[in-house]
Length: 254
Image (cartoon, rainbow, N blue to C red; front, side):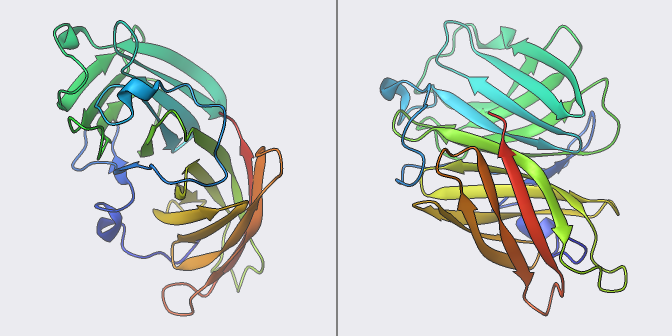
C-alpha cells in the first residue's frame, strides 16, 4: 500500500512502531466483547474476561509472526513465533511478577527469554487497553510493528497473515505489502509493511463472515471463509490519501 495516512496519527487507535531495542511509543490494543464470526476455539478462561488476567494475542509485522501473552497460567509468560520467514520462537517468563494477581494493572511488565528476547507489556486492572510497549529480538533486523487484543471465553482472537498485491501498479506508485490481521468478536485490526518500507495500520468491523476493513487510505469488504481459515477481498483507495487498490489474501496461522 504505497500511499499512507500518517503513521503517528494511528498510534492511539491502531498500532505503533517498535524499534529493535528501543521504543518511543506503544502498540494499541482492544478488549473486544462483541459477537461476530469468532465463536469457538478460545483458550481464555471466563473468570478472567473482565480482569487483567487471561489471554492476549496479536501479530508481529517486520518479518511476520505472532505472540501470546498468557496471564492465566500459574506463572505469567509470553511466547512468540516468527512465521515468514519461519525462524526463532521463544517462551519469555516474567520474574518480576511473582506477587502479581489478576485484577491488578500491569505497567511495562518485562518478559525475558533465554534467547535474550524482551517484551514489555501493559494492561489495565479490568483487561482493557492492552499494549506492547517495546520489544527486543536479538536475531531480528529492522523495525517491528505489533497489534494486540484480549481474548475472552466467548470470543477467540484469530491471527491471519498474508499479502496485499496491487490491482494495478499505477506507474509504480502501487506496490506489494505484507499484511497481518487479527479478528476478535466484532473487531479487527491490521498492520502492513510495503516493499518500499512504508508502513501503517487500520481497523475493521466483523459481521458474520464479512470484515469491513480500512488501512492506509484504502477500504473494502473482505470475506472470511466458512472454516475461518482464510480472508480474501479487495480494498480500494479513497482517491485522496491513496489512489491504489489491493487484492488481500490472508491465511489463518493461529
